[in-house]
Length: 488
Image (cartoon, rainbow, N blue to C red; front, side, top):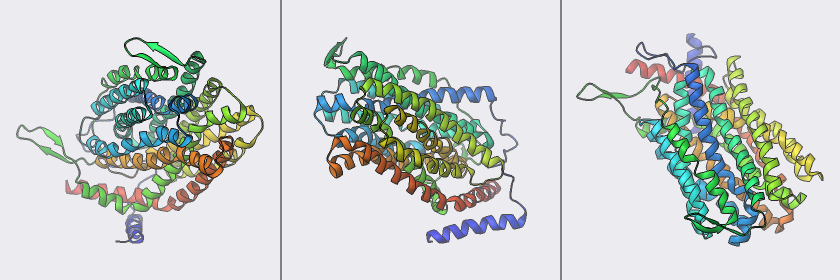
């Protein structure tokens, strides 16, 4: 069946539901709970879980983004180019983050999600610390790949868990708060890194117990990596929530229920039936992430090259902007998604991505060209705020249109697309323009403006194209749930 045929089928289902008078209000669960399904956990404990997961997500982004502040010393000591550095920041991490994310997503749909999260945190924390002993570019590249493997476990499991801890009309806020970890972590990576870099400024090597002599910048990896092991132990204490909605189960010889996985062909068929919605959502989200990852990787270097700041100054000031305005943006995005949905916008969670991308454009065009470093940072603040709406609304948008036992796989696929395009291409696209178009390190500001603005304009068009199909996909899920509950 062609893509247009799928869309017609989805719309036909929606039209039938309206005619039959079965369309549900804007606020609703994705399926009515069965008689023996327990109520949602207490609000206090549910938000406690969010808090622990935010901490884990914060550490993941500290470990993921710390390299962006260390561009200058790493380039100097390992004798590499902007493009090679961008591959360390983006591609080395993204390669195995995306490859491992898909099978982990399938495991999330049937296995103990809390244990998956704890194991992932421990693994990426160890890999981050090992970056502190790397002696060559390729050793550092290998350990960055290991960080990606560990971090691949967190978000698919976290999205799935939170969808079972919160009813649909509260998920946007919960997932938005969880998404704060991105910007708290990215900002703290810059602030902590800036403090450490300033402390070791002028020192080429240092001696660490057991490890021995390392480059001064490698100390940062031990500072941010090792505490993550304690976070892994804390995460292991969380309670695994009951899976809600239609769940495939079998009963063993002792009468115990066991969750069974949905066949891959059924997952693929469901996603194919909603192809336009998923394409618009995932690619639009990914383009917003591409802009965010790209500029965040190079803004510290932009201030160093264009405005003469030290690495410590760039890290601390930009880090504070990311923590404050990135966090505010992601929470606002999640809140707006819930509010728009509550007042009747069935495409509310996708519409927020559109608003954020469009609003970020004028600030993104201006800040690379102003002469004042202070004014540039002031303009970066609203650009960061609006661009981060996608992190608050994007993940909850997927939970809204997927059945329970496909959410882990759907989230993993979303993360695959967002990471390949966002982290895999964002930092490198800017570096390629600087290295090969201009062939001039001092033109980084122009590269930032060209790449980031172009990406946002395309994102607006892609997201707008999917608004109508997103509404139809929500109706499609309701119909699918009724059919499968009836057959259970």
